[in-house]
Image (tube, rainbow, N blue to C red; front, side, top):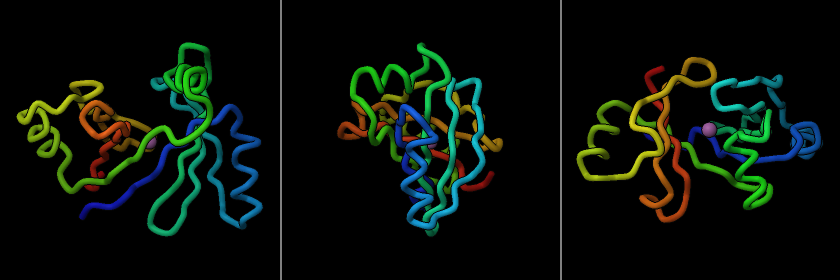
Length: 132
Ligand code: CO
């Protein structure tokens, strides 16, 4: 089944960005660093979905570059798909532009790919496997 797994939000500071959600009474996960992506993140569960707050760990992080160019705000939308390898194969066949050709392993061992905004109407689209 397809769901919105999470919305990724680029922030300068996790400490200040997560405060609003704590004030609303939502629970915020412990901070986790993903070395491969050069980000530190927290997840905020909201119903069946989550918000993912992303803070860069260094200047050449993708998130650091996003913040420099666009400022804080919505960075990507993540859909959970039933069969990620099959979905990726179909997209490639149709000439859809992916950010990287290979499926990667991310936080918590989940598999993911990013579809380039040029192929999605301007939204960086993350796809994760519901089978993980
Ligand atoms: Co994400």
